Image (cartoon, rainbow, N blue to C red; front, top):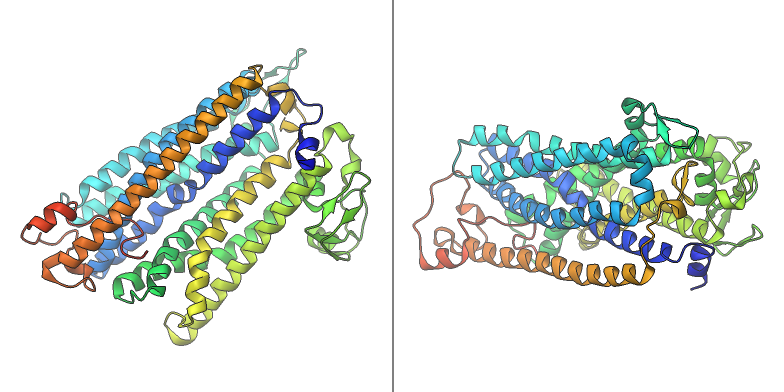
Length: 493
């Protein structure tokens, strides 16, 4: 409550409900984004393996993952549509003044969204109806469409962090818009690649985690081994890349958004030999309590030298920087993100070392327990990364050009709270339905695996996407759902 009081001090009454509603819908939507951006690529890797090696199990997994992709995309339509309306309803000042400058990003995202919908429909339709090679080639643009959608959103967000590509007239309105500069801002490259690789890491660990749970429950067949190995390998290879990109974007923030960097690291006064605090709390007088202090480390991390000068929060007026409460929040989220990434890096190294030495999966139960939790840790890191990015820009919605208070709607706060309550109810129903559908699909796939060709559940590859259909039975009609199309859960949990 003490932190909340600092966050809403001297703010319009509608600021708190508008921020809370936007934060809730963003936090909910972003849990779906990794699967939307990266699952198409992971699925096509498995699909390619199946075609190249004539591997029926890999083809079955690819088909089942494509079904999850479609269900997830449908849920993302709902949450994404809500967000698009909220931009106009909650922040009319932003869209009214600046929409012509950075709105191109939302336009690109909309076109990518429709393209991805068409490609997913073709991919789903193509199983058993198209020649294998034709089907695979038609699906190749799908990961590119997903990345194009991320391109549009990240272009808009990076512009809000480092706005450029316009001039201001005498009334303070943007004119002479240069779309190219508005899209490719100084923070676009670091943000985009950091985000894309984060999505790949997260989706890989989430999918692999489902099969790790199945492995821990004794389902040691080839289906679960392959379902774990392919996505986990992709995530493990991407994890050290993400670690390097994370360091790069932190350095970009240090150079291009020094006040945000000061808030992330709780640096009060501009100085050299600045210590690094692991967690802790910033106070209004600049003191830091709690946490672990590492002398000079912040300067070393920022510029590789202990005498690197780090800009402090007091370098700008209090009205132009995050509050001490906001600084504490983003410092914690930043540390949690880095901590989760470090643990995932150790897990990836564990996997890599065992594979290089023995060409097999680690046999330790603790490895699979850790792998089962890796997806949750990745999602937590993604959520913390967005909090750091958005809260660290405060009090600006367009950095150094428009404050959040100037962009917020004039709608009564009571109406916004009612809307917030309705959105919560709707999202509980939507995500509950999503979970119910996945569980229903899992049940159908288990039944289909058990009944495929009369073979036991250990041989799910008996029903293959491109192979001949087995004779229809009453059980197939009830449970196979068209020869088994299943989610990452396919018997894992």
